[in-house]
Image 1 (tube, rainbow, N blue to C red):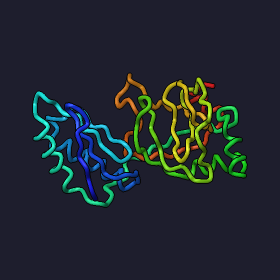
Image 2: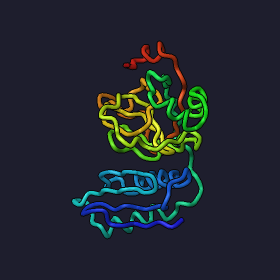
Image 3: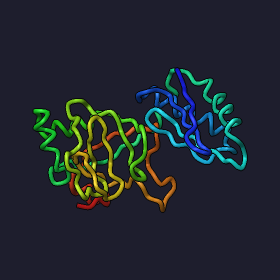
Image 4: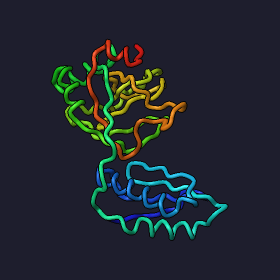
Length: 227
């Protein structure tokens, strides 16, 4: 494993683990987070894991860049190429239907399969949380089966509803709040992906696994979903 540690600001470093993400790289990042939290906890302001990198923000009142860089090298020097675990598994309910997923038929037509096949394929995969960004609670999940992978829309929608389950290329996600968006919509999830009123405020974190479970319209509404 070849790591690179580069300056990312006045009080930040970014550690690059690989050029591309993978479950193994994601596990290495999670191991690094654990090591750094254990060894540098009093010096760290925040750790922000992403696809193949980790942003480390430190407290300049307690340390300096030279000390932090040396301690980061020590914290990650013991990492190896193996995985350290798969994170927790979260199952999210989804109301898949043309009513809730206006792009289901488009994906089915492109893949030359029917809508039920699209739904089944989407449910069969166990996805890994590679990053959280764009908006609080927006978890980038991969990887979507090649058969139902779909490019982003050429013209993004101005309003995508909260809970929209979507596909873009080989990633899938649940929109945590109403926002503009260019992903392909295939269903609605009643689970809140971000709620600042509770702790933890998000049901998933980087390194976790996510599976989807099909539910009917009535159950979706009973669980607090909105159409």
